Length: 336
Ligand code: SAM
Image (tube, rainbow, N blue to C red; front, side):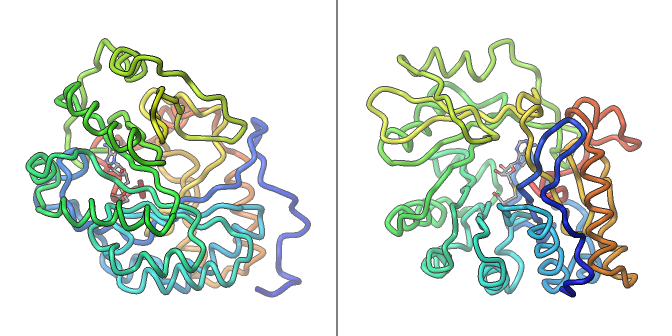
C-alpha cells in the first residue's frame, strides 16, 4: 500500500451509534462441499463463475485496508473456505503480512484434517467447527454427505493441537431435547464452547422455522440444571453459560432474535466483494467494482469508512431497508 494513499489518520471505524467495528468476516468462496438442508437445496445454490469471486490478491488487498482502518480480527468463511484451492497459503500470507491480526476460521471440517498443523503454526486464533449432531446417520440426513467421521477426527486433532475450538450447532424445529443433551457432552467432556444457533431465514430455500414457544435459553435452563449465564467483558456473538461439572461452556447465538445488535462490532465481505454491515442488509458497498476499476487504496478506504459509519441501528432496521426479499438467500452465499 502506498503510504501517501492511506486514509489517515483514521483511529478506528466507529458507526453513528457509537459501535467500534474491529471484526471482519471475509468469505472467500460461495461453494460448499456439504448440502445442509437448512442452508441449500440438494442441487446446491447458484454459484458465481470464478471470475466474479474476488481473487486472493484482491482479498489480501482488502484485508490490509481493513486492518489499516482498525480491524483486529478477521474470520475466513464461505461457503466452505477449504473448498477453495489455496485457502491455507492465503491464510498464511494474511497472518505473515498483518502482524498482530487475530485470524480465525469457520469451517465444516470436512477437508481440514491435513491442514491443522499448519493452521496451528500460523497462529490461528481459533476455529469454529460446524457440527449439528453426534449421530452419523442424522449427519448424513442433514448434510446429505457421509463425512461425520472426518469432522469428528478434526475435532479431536484440533484439541490435541490446542487450537481454541468452538462448535456451532444449528437447532432446527426437529432437533429434540435428547440431541441437545448429546451435543452438550462435547462441552461437558472437553474444554470447548458449544454454541446452539437459532435457525435464521437464510436457508437457500423457502423453508422457514416455526417460531417455538420455548426459547433456546428456556430450553437449556430446563435441560441443564445449574446453568448460569457468564458475564463477559468481551464482545461476543453468543451468550455463554456455565454448567456445573462441565469443562467447557454452552452458548446460544440468537441471530434471528437479533439480540446482540447493540454491541455488534462486525461487518462482512461476501465472496463477490459486497460489504455488508449486517446479515440482514442488501449490501452497502460494491468493493469488487472499486477494486476492478482502478480505485486507489485511499478511495476504497474512504468509501469503506463512509459505508460503515452509516451502519443502521439493528438487524430489524437493516431488514426494513432491503429492496430484495432475503428468505431465499443462503448463508453460503452471504458468507456465514
Ligand atoms: N462452510 C463453513 C461452515 O460450515 O462452518 C462456513 C459457512 S457456513 C454458512 C457458517 C455457519 O452458518 C455454519 O455453522 C452453518 O451451520 C450456519 N448456517 C447455515 N445456514 C444457516 C441458517 N439458515 N441459520 C443459522 N445458521 C446457518
